[in-house]
Image: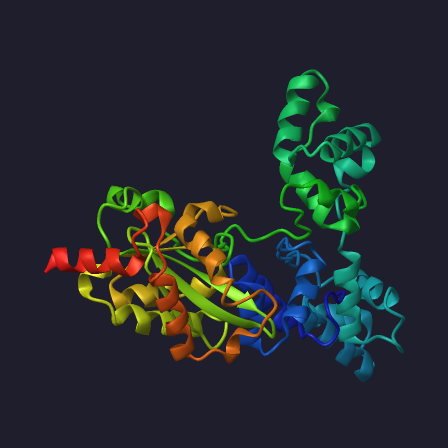
Length: 384
């Protein structure tokens, strides 16, 4: 069988890669499980545009590898074609043609003959887009206009109802884009797809929302009490970044604008969630109700945060920082203390607490020029 993919990847591993890809496993996860780099896995998948190749099978009438090995042994023993055919229950003419097309009796090798047979058996049906230039041109023109393959396929049926030659399924268009060996549509047309994707994903693949957040609860599902800021205990959070890959987590209480700053070791979700959990657990229970965050991957482990703090996390819509307006405004004030381009890792938690205290003791117009600290103390007193 012809070899495909990255050299050095055994055939058994190639089949396992395709199996796991079809099941929806991410490339990195497949590579880790097989001890291979993501690049090696991606290289194999890219050979077929991420589309799982159909499983090939040997026709019942075809010679098997075991039969070819028997032929090779018979030739080495000096048996005639008729004798080999009798032992295999095959016509002598079948044996003669098999040996003749694979170098003759002196050069015949079973494994090599079997590989060549698999190669000769490849009879791919020409792609309709490769053989029909008019159809190919229509499809390419609409792709450039940013039409989806589904829209193109449906439009062709409506525009040319009587011309069967101008029919193509959206799946054929996708395959022609992703599998360049079909020789139909140019790879550059992939740039006009909405996703700009150059490789087909498995339908079983669990795709996280933007930011890599799995099972994210949308901000649109927040209770009404969060929206009207009537009850304290609902927070907005974010990371502010500095030089040398340094970060500080910010938490702002929606009703009082009270701010807490949290030192984090890194941007990874384990570090951020761990640090936030410790900080939130120090709050009175009545101030632990919800947290609204953006789509950053630092909150990918939001379920762990909720388990540790009993605080539900809600996520903003993509590219909608205004949905965390209190936090965004506070981050702007914070830059007076933590300027852009500075290394934030030099600040200890004690130093961050002092900065937060300074912010919480500054009068705010939105609070009637009371301070966040004053408003929070009022809220806490009213719940006692």
